[in-house]
Image (cartoon, rainbow, N blue to C red; front, side, top):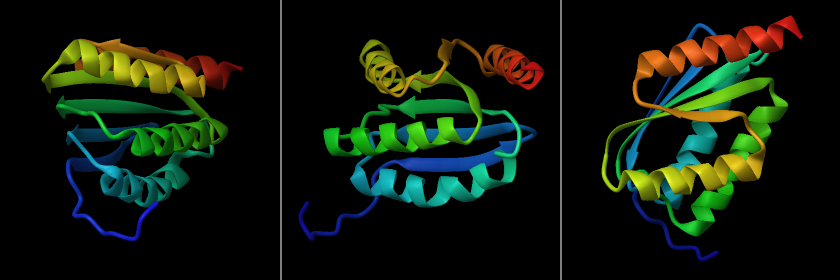
Length: 139
């Protein structure tokens, strides 16, 4: 890795809604954005990790990252799985190149072994995530 510093590209907003970590991302993003995500997400996970939780991922724009950043994202998701992550639902909101984006994120989730799904609406995703959380809580 080089020592050059680049400005963050892309946008990210994190929030908690019950046992959901809501991740709103707009891309394309760069390595610096993924590093910022890694630094920020832990505080949110710490608040909900004491029982099963799930991620609701709302993506817009062209939510892709370079290969080095993709590897870091996968590692961050693997860590979440160790912290009681029950599932991840992805909603493509006004996404460019949806087929490419879906393939890109599918590769990441398949690599990490996280239970995931793609949904057409946020409401549909929330219903599915609630079931996944309840199933994990039931044991």
